[in-house]
Length: 214
Image (cartoon, rainbow, N blue to C red):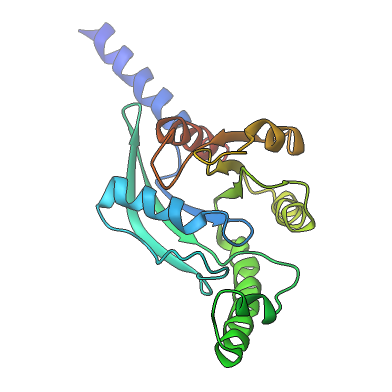
């Protein structure tokens, strides 16, 4: 009996040393139309049955930070309570004329451009509240952009743990290795948020990321 008590004691000590923070603020960042909201919706639907936000082919559909609390994700007999925070797409320049190609009239295009600019500023401000960040990139596009470098640079400056998701691997031309080569110091996981492909590996990577939270 004493041996069992000692074993139980050390088991509790080990658990307390390595257990992760109970509540984690998880931010999704990336350029416009990389699939941040689609991934946020996939995560929330997987674990709460509800989606988080509206998805659209028009850039900057998400122009305000939106979040969902108490998203309890389970993996490998562990459970973590996340707040999923979906942020507006980061862009160095937002021109209202770009929206005209999607059928918006001039008034609506200027309104969206103004809201999108405010959204970028808001997204950057929210970085200070994040415990971990997922940078969502379109795997069919060139990762070597000023926007992507700016996003990662801001995260490095704040010492926030980062996981890079190469999204849209279901599409022709998707190249996860190109994203891995662009950011070799980070874990990269390829997924199709739209179809739920490779989400198990994503959740495993997410739990490994949370271990880095101090």
